[in-house]
Length: 96
Image 1 (cartoon, rainbow, N blue to C red):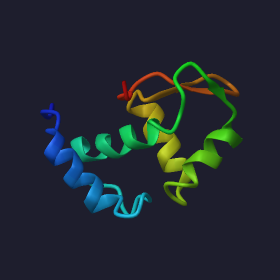
Image 2 (cartoon, rainbow, N blue to C red):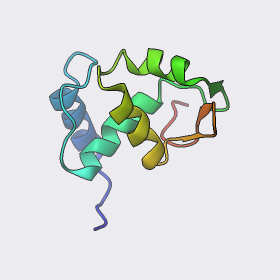
Image 3 (cartoon, one colour):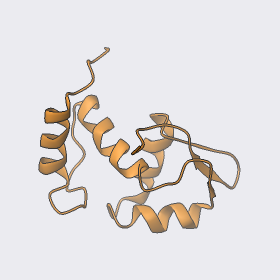
Image 4 (cartoon, helix red, strand yellow):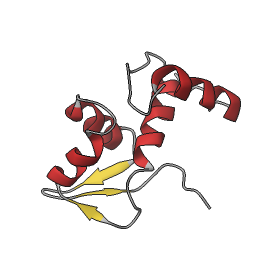
């Protein structure tokens, strides 16, 4: 089922609810809300930089203790790609 992207106001509301202090407290059931969280996490990675899994985990640890769920979510939802030993950011929003 396709969902409309959330407005900026809704996005801020999701971040306040699920990341009140910069860490993810729970993953929302609604995909559109999960995408907001994954986008926020993806912003911690520089586009074009290749990261080892250990480097990715170090960044993700600042957002949640469940590193595997975040790593898989970022890849499955198209925010990051990976090959055998490296990850890189390929999606999400960027600050201009």
